[in-house]
Structures are given as C-alpha cells and as structure tokens.
Length: 123
Figure 1: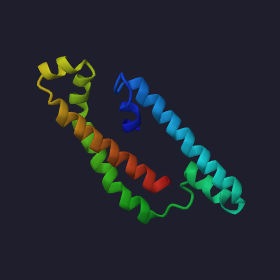
Figure 2: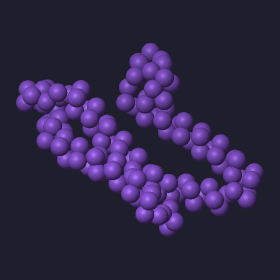
Figure 3: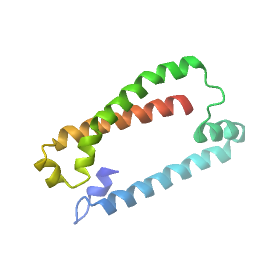
Figure 4: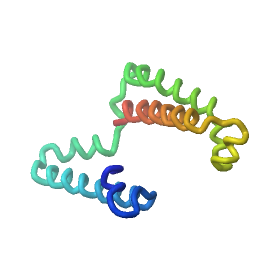
C-alpha cells in the first residue's frame, strides 16, 4: 500500500494511503469472491473462517493467547499517559518529555500483541 501510495507528484499523503488501501482491499476481496463462487464446497467453511468464530475454541487455545494479551494490555496501560500527551500534539508531547519514536513503536507492539491474541482465538 505504501509503495503505491508514495508514487506520483505529491508523494505520500494520508488520503492517498487510505484510497490505495481501500482499492487494494476491494481487489483482494474480488479475487476471494471469485474463488469462492467457483468452489461452492468450501464456501461455507471460508465464510465462517472470514467472519471468525469462537464456538469451537478450547481452553488450550485461550491459554496460549492469554500471555500475549496480558503483555499487550499491560504495555497499553503503561503507555497510556504518554499516549494521552501525544494526543495533545507532537510538539506538546516532546515538550513534556515524551519520546515520540519510543512511544509509537511500543504502542505498535501493544496493538500487534492484542490483535494477534484476538485473531488467534477467534480467527
């Protein structure tokens, strides 16, 4: 998405990233829909997988995801003051002593851990 978005005269802009992401998502969805239409036998299984399901989740699966979720949650709680200051603006946060790069990278790690734990359980 970033490669396609950064091409052109204006370079990388939030609008171009958003539109390029939407276009690529629509393209991937159309390919998925084509494959599903051609093979009706797997349509139901794939539809359930795409929507996510927690009906058949066993305790072992939840236990394996709980560690990542706990670390992600603790990291998010620890980062909350810095993220609140960052919400005031980059210059204000830097003035208050927030390391922008460190805060953003750790927030990205917390998001990845929490999303990964949720997806590993529900699909």
